[in-house]
Length: 358
Image (tube, one colour):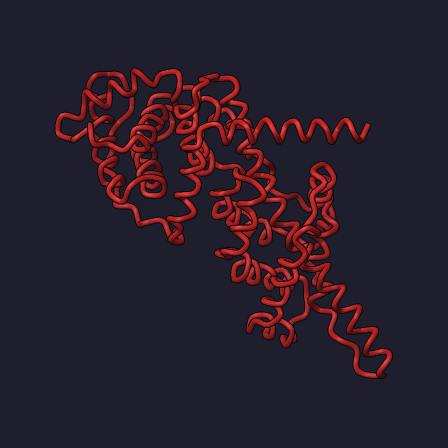
C-alpha cells in the first residue's frame, strides 16, 4: 500500500523536521521515517474499519426497527444495507481482524461521528437508489459502498479534523490512503470470503529499501547536493529560495543520483508536484527550472549517467484545495521536536500496553 508517492511525501516532511531539530541522529531519524510510514498503513486499516463501524450501526438500527415492526404487526424493514454482503465480508476479514486486535483499534470513542456518517449516507440520493434497485447481489453491494466511501468519507472536513487529533502523522496521509481504500473495495471478491487479501504494507522490499536509501542519501550527502544547486543557480536568485524548496531539491538530486532506473523526467515531475503541495505558490515553476538545470549539469559533467529526455507537460494533479491543512502539517514540522517526541511517546505507550497484557 505504501507507494513511492507517499514515501516521497514522508521524506520531504521528515527531512525538513530533521534540519529543524537540534539533535541530528541519523538512526533515530530513519526509525521515525519508517514509523511514520507504518502509521499511514494504520490509517488504511482504520478507514476500512470505519466501513465496518457504519455497518454495525446500521445493524443496530435495523434490529430496533425490526422489533418495532414485530410489535406493531407492520412490514419488516429492509436488511439490505445492514447486511450488505461486501461490508459483512469486510467485517469478517482475517487481515483486518488481526490488525484490529494488534492495535486495539475501535471507533467506539467516536460513535457520534459514525452515527452522523450513517445518517448522511442513508439520507442521500445514492442510498435511495441502492435500496430501490432490483439488483440485489454482491457486486451491487460492493459498488454501493464504493460510492458511499467516495461521496461521504473522502473530502470530509470533519473526518479530517478528527483524524488529525488522533495522530499527527495522519495530517497529510488521507488523500493517498483514500485511493487505496477504493482500490481495495474494487478488488474484493465474494468467493474469497474472510481470506480476501488486503493490500500489504509494502508492495515489496524494494519500496522499503527505496525509502531508506533515499532518506539516507539526502541527509548524508546534503553538502554535496547543495553545492550542485549553487553551481547551477547563476541564472536563478538562489538566495531568495524558501528553505522548503532547498529541501525538496536536495531530495530530488538524491533520487536522481541514487536510483539509476528512475528517469530524470519522472523525478523532476514528482518533486515539482511536491513543491506545489508544500511550499510557496511560485515554487513549482522555480524548482522545475532549477532541477532541469541541475540534471543537465550532472549529466554533462559525468556525475549522472542518465539521458535527459523531453518532458511532456504534466496535467496538474487533481488535488483538493487544502492549503490550511498543509500549513498545519508544515507548522508541525517547524515545531522541531514534535514528531520525535510523539514517536517516543507512542513507542512508550505501546510498550506499557504490552507489559499490561503479560
